[in-house]
Structures are given as C-alpha cells and as structure tokens.
Image (cartoon, rainbow over all chains, first blue to last red; front, side, top):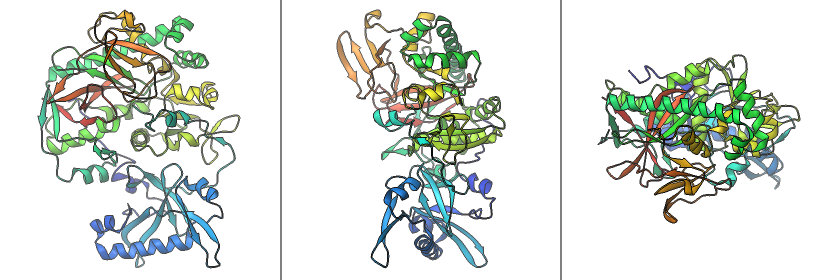
Length: 177
Length: 376
C-alpha cells in the first residue's frame, strides 16, 4: 500500500469547528460562516436565515468597531475592507465591511447564535461577538472557514512590511510554484 | 500509464469545500482541480517513479554538499547573492532539516522519468496531492492504491524538527488563496504532529531591531515561509533573517537547489544520468533543440524553446534578470492532447507520492489543471 491509511484534518474542512470551539466567547460548535442568506438558506432554510441575518446586521450596526479615519480602520482590517457611515448629527465614521456571518442552529436560551464577520488585515475572518473581536478563520477562495478562535489584541509599534515586496513586483501575486 | 475519462462525483465542489476546506479548486474562473479524468499507472511504473525520485534527491543533496565545499566559485555560478553564503553554509553544517520538495518529471510510462526542474523551496499543489486526490480515490474506488503517503509523511516529518515548545509561524503572501491554502494545510499537519503554531502574512512580519515579531508583539523564532529565499534575502529584512535570528523552513541551504542553474551543476556532477536532461549555463554547451529557463522564476514564466537561434515557443513574465540555464529539449508526453507533467514529492527527503498536472501547452504554467491518479 502506497497511500495514506487515514487522513484527518485539524484545521481545514469540517473538523475545524469541533476542534476549535472551546472558549466561552467563541461560536457554538455547529456555527458556520455564510456570506449571505442564499448560502445559509441552502443549509437551514429561509426563515432561520432571515432571522440570523437581521440579528447579525443589528450587532454589526450597534457594536462594530468605529473609527474617525479610514486609515485607522484599514490599519486593523486591511485596505479596502472598510466603509463609511453617517452619524445622526451629519458627521461620518468608518467601520469594517460586513462580509457575512457565523450562524449556528444550536438554540441557546431561545436565541439562535448569529454574529457578523469581517475580513481582517491578513485575510483572516474576524467575528464580532457582541462587540468583542475573534479571529475565527481565514477567507480562502471566497468562502470563510473557521480555523481558530483568539481575541484580537492591540499591536505593538514595530517596523513592518520588510518582506513581501517581490511578490507584487513579479506579477502573479503568489510566491509558490 | 494511461489517461482515463471518468465521471466526476456529483456535488464534488460542495464536498471538497466543506469537508476538506479546498477553496481553490477553480482559479480565475477556470477549473484547476479536474476529476473528469484520471491517470492509471502500473505498479512497475510507480516503482520506477519512486526509485528515480529517491535517486534525484540523493543527487540533489550531494550537489549541496559539493557546492558548499567548493564555496565562492560555485555560489557565483548559481547566482546566489553573497549575503546569503554564510547562512547557506551554516544551515547545512548545522544539519538543519528540510521539509519538502517537488521534482517535476517528464514521464510517459516507457522511457525513464526525466527531471525538468526541482522546486525545492516553495512548491505548491501539495494539498491537492496529499488530501484531495486521496479523498477522490477513497470515494470512488477505495480498493485501489495510489502513490501518495504525503499526509502521513508530513506529520512524521514535523515531529523530527526539534520544534517542540517553540511556536512555529506559517507565513505566505497575504490574500493569495492557493499559497494560503497550501500553508494552512501544512500548519494542519504540524498541529497534528503536536507542534504549537500560528500564522502571519509575510507582509505583517515585524522587526524591532532585535527580533522578528508577530502582530501581537510576540517573538517569531521559528518560521515556515511559502516565500522564496532569494526574495527574502533581497528584501529589507533579509539581512536579519540571514543572521540566523529565527529558524527557517525550508532551511537556507535549499537556495542551492531552488535556482535552475542547479540543473546544469547536477548534469556536470552526473553526466548522462538517465533521470537528468543535459543542461548548461552556456547556450553553446548543448546540441539541438533546447529550452532556456531563467535561473530564478516560477510558474513557467519566461521560458523559451529554442532551435538554434530560432524561438519556437515562449512564455511571458518578469524573470530572467539573473541569467538563464539551457536544458536539452525533451517532448512533454501528451495524452488525449493534454501535456502531462508529474510532480513527484519528497517529504524529509523521502519519496512520498505524485501529483499530475495537465496543460494545454507544453510549458506547464499556473493555468494547468490537477488530475488525480491511481495504480493497479
């Protein structure tokens, strides 16, 4: 036999959430990322997804991190990942773009779990759990997958960007071959 | 070795995305993972590929030894920048372990496999080989065998790096789906080997004048990078990395093998070897049709097929600044009009399996399709 006997995946694919869901503030084990209600409906049906999206939207609008300057927002979430909004008083602020939401069908005290997800600066998927940010995975080729849970923390001042220039210079954007 | 047309699994896209986390099966709207066909090998052919791979790896390691013993003159022929020489020699003398590499072979099932090039530093198509084609076979014909223990060998290999207790960071270019998918898969296998891991985009790596830092300000002392050594060495933080402040995988000595001038030095070391094509740094060193490849390049860029001074075929790109290597032309075997190249993997320098890429042209590019295989 020249093939692997068994293959388990710890991070990728379906196994990821079961392994990673351990903190009190992370999503429940059955939570999955959905980019929109269409993706969600295919799994849970129309009505629960409408509810979930409305709940995630509300958390997003009320509890997303807000910044005075676009640069501040993009420093956290990456260039192009922020949008501007108007305040009631006519001013404006910046907040991360909603990319989708984590939803679980597990009912917790009558509430279905549903929280907004943003794209983080390194392509990570950042979940806003009622105002606290968690790295819940990565955006691969369009769909999100949970890979880990950890609280987002502030960054120390150091010089960065000393690697990575050649990839852009040589075209395709990637570095593998 | 035969190409067979087969029916794709119904719903395979959702399956590979959700159950395997394989997000880049389609790239730029074009199919990349292609299960409308597969290749069937005989056991004898697989043995031949495995033996050739083992032998090529031994020759490659022999070349590293020879280059480091020769020193300056050999480094210059390989166009390796001077600032990297000490790091290369140091990592080799310290016997720093290597994880993986992919030999790209021209093979038709009849003639001996011939080395087109060795991607020793940043090979991709690993997850597709290790997991996706394995899963395809398990779902379609589990009684059949496949030359592919890449997954098991990766987990075994990680356990031997001496990194227990150290946090190993996995790094690739930000937002590049294929590179990040490959890197996350490698991290997955490292976790299964019991290593502590994290991930960081190569652009986000910080330097505080003393050590490399992650975005939380934690020191990076062990780094897997899916990013070429020759780029790292030339960039702003390159000197810091070459100073040895962090353990790097692949080790610096892979720079000897990851540039295509090594093809010419391999041929000098073992002229006439049945698994090598004649190669030279001098275009007049070869007879007949030849292929000109940039010493540093990826994804088939800036390759020319030459007949004398006449260019028969070529691909565009931004490479070639360091010069070229010339390799004797060999027909890339074609099956049903598809040009087929076999990527044969070594994990910790042991043959571990193959992945097949097909392209519509004889120069394999990043537009090629990955096609699964089995043997019986």
